[in-house]
Length: 281
Image: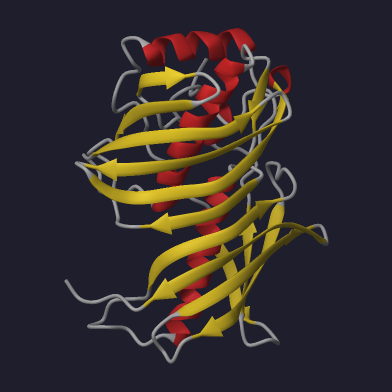
């Protein structure tokens, strides 16, 4: 099965599950990695919620990214740490799942998701239902082998330039092939929404770096993201155009950046990102 359940899977073990209601799990970040960005922590929470949702419908359907109403960033994580994950499903049926989730390291919160909604689509379009059910059994039992995630190369933002509105523009070239497509998804490769979220964050940080003064040479840091909407699937080889503009600023102390993502002339995603100057450590 190649990289399936290793290249883009971020739940090692499900320690408690009530299908359709809640789940607890863990993921050990391999210590050999150079970094583990916040977007992958959000992905881990989404995947845990997905397991609870898929189990509730007998693995006949699976959720895909739709809306993350709010993502709160509480702290960075490091390779070698273990993420404790919790997902609470507020509603779940064959059409959609609504959930929230929390990630922590040694009791300290690092990221929180709320007001998240994902449409439920036929499983067979994306993956083998039997393989998914078998993996769920493994995760709820002995657990998957820790450290199997090999890391990934996140596509770079290209052609960053000033826009007429005073913001920044960039292009994201989705690779034609990449190991993470083996997990996302085997039967229908789709660019992960969490990696698009990461691109939005990087462009927002670049714009905020021009607006907010650094504190003791530290770049602006993320406070939260809101209204992160995913309107269409992005396929291998597509180009995404990102446009970031300043929405609000509070006397040099914080900034809110709104980002639109378009492909083939149509808006495919959007979000608002709030940033703050970071104190030295």
